[in-house]
Length: 483
View 1: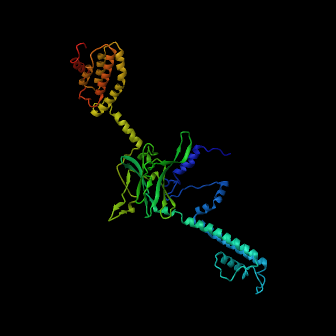
View 2: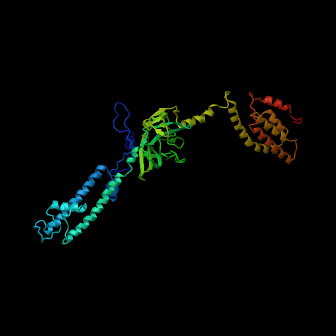
View 3: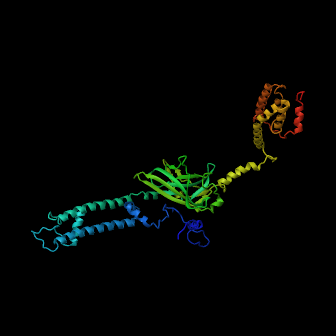
């Protein structure tokens, strides 16, 4: 009884076999089973089709075109040989049934086909008719209606067979697969920094002078994974961004180009580091498509890079040089790379370090720079500024005098970042009055002065912050008599 396979069994079947093939020899790393070879051939075979095999016969022309050359040539020869033998046998059968082979041919006798005495002569008559050679020695007489019908059938059948087989051979010969062999990919991919960002790069080139019209490149990441629901996905395909949004995937492939995949938070390699690269198991499939300029047919070239073909901290050597009146491409250095300083950390780890670096310099550290004091202090002031309107509203409804409350609030802000000179402005807000209109004016002026004191132009950072006692002594010198 067949049932649903266990995920562990599926993982062992697809995952482990995908990782390595063959026994390990001498402790060396086992050979990786590739999904796509370096030459672009896909290592996928379809089996156990059952009754679905009849679908290939429904599209016989495409089936013949997809066959290998040796099978196409064999089918070509067998089809013509069998057709010729069958048609020659039919002509020999007509002559045999009419008695043309047993009677002596004289001037008064009118056979179906003149000068047909045996099977070789019937076969030669068919070849002469099919190839329209017409030597004139063998011909059909008007007293053979069955021969005339067979001649018409032979002409129609020959035209169909010629159109089918010759068309199939022509399409197979004109396929642009061989054009893909003149498109080069670098043997290895590299990981290094470009414009301050960590990037995965590889190189492509065109060996012919004829261009690839509307060339476009795509990348697929082939990697087995398991979903949060427990489903195991063997050889899961994920898209790698090589410039879809910016149009960098549209190539003007005149000289070798370096294709770049920026590793960011949306990239599958967001957590990839130099250390984890040795334990990862993935395959990058590169697909280059374009229209052949000479034939107008679409061409596709493919290659792949496994994890052991990705070099961390490398960059490609330049291959372009300026000669007398033209640019020269040196393909001898097309695959060569050199090492460059590259952080061994992943983009995720670098981002976490940048986020943790401000926290390591806490506000209690005496060695903090004045700029960091200003940034932390400004956050506190901004938070206090959001609370000032509600506090001032409370002070207007309290029993205390408003100038005294405003002075107390200004003093608390002075303890953070304000200078004493700015606080003296709040003491001169307005004389004491008991009317509601006066209270509102005092609130508005206190808010304006407090907002001015929050600007960076009035912030002063003394080397030694004044203590509470010192601030109170300075304030007492300028307080009004009533306060």
